[in-house]
Length: 589
Image (cartoon, rainbow, N blue to C red; front, side):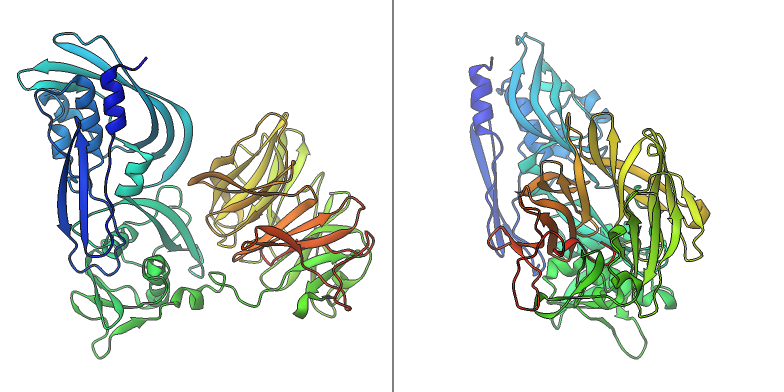
């Protein structure tokens, strides 16, 4: 049971006022009092409104619970980067040991449980739920565990002080929203041809603008999850001098130029990383030590440079394919489809679950699940068998025209395979998957992230990992569960939304959006849905109604409804079971 003091402190909590534009005002109430501090933002057109939390030092007349509440509030102060005020809540000995940079525990508080307050020593326990951890790289890891953290306090001449507490910062979800930026950093794939996104949390620095904070974090490189899988165009040791604005451009001033063959990748990295802060409307310029990048002309970067470098960033005029009557069709104008050229457009009905490559090839799984065949989408394109196995997952292409599948030898043994154009299968090391039953595998369009559905006894769960290496040295690492298996839960299908998020269709036809940085979000349920595919905001589903009639449905975000997509030549969206469209798929989907 909470004490009266516990209720009062919990009710006061930690508050902050948001102000918009040039001025910010912040408050931190502790012990029933609040202090407001005005702050003038200095010329930051790229910065969003933010809330400042100004920490107060402890007072001698505060109770033990009030001291713990004040310490929690001081940990959330972005203005006190070294947490000097927070250390004033600690004993001299513990202040030397406490490391606020060792990570962040994100929580939802439920209550304080105080021990009997003795004259010289007591303990206050913070109870609630741990909802996430932020590591030293800034990686956000969703959690759902019990919070039960004790704070030991001793009383001296200056009042209660904390002598023992968890290492690192403990921040509420609201604290994290105020004190951290959610930033998408972009790096280069192993071939230096595509962009790979990684989302991190970056502490807000009130003395800096958001663009500067973001570029500084970009120059530090990827987190440990992607470090072996991606590249950065910036030379090692490159530092940021400043980020300013000039002539409607964001000017990035660096200490070093990049290598001459890395200018285009560097331009794409910067434009993609800063595009969310500028809403895509600002161009960019890169300087070196305050001087123009080139001796005779400035280096100017278009606001959408990332799209020119990597067309999958914002793909346009990409139409989906689907199966109908046993043949592969391409959806055209007015949502009327036509059969593709070559053998794939012939109505033989022996293959299912098609996958389309970047270069215009289709791979499909035989209906007995033992063979994957590939055919070029050309007039003379013929089916060729690429993989023969015991029990294969539906095929998935990566951006390098490499085919992926998993051969299930039995219910507890799986072998991940990647197949080059020579049709030679390369085994892929995948610790944790080799002793499980892998139901599905999908490579993201960035060629680095991979999602798998793993069956374990009665449960099925979805994991996301990282592809590292090439050819015979390829491996899948750092698999993280993003949809945990509930008893009896099954997964029908998965489809990448982008490089960060994955759509998951459960056996109950519930549609989820999942990622390694957020808890799964429920989007919609529709019992008719069998398969899904997605691309750049478009979400499609293959569906079958109670009468067995098939259709491809499109998710309308405005009305939050599924709508029939494919029409016949007369404009009707009604098809029979025999000729109805099914299994929609986007390229690299």
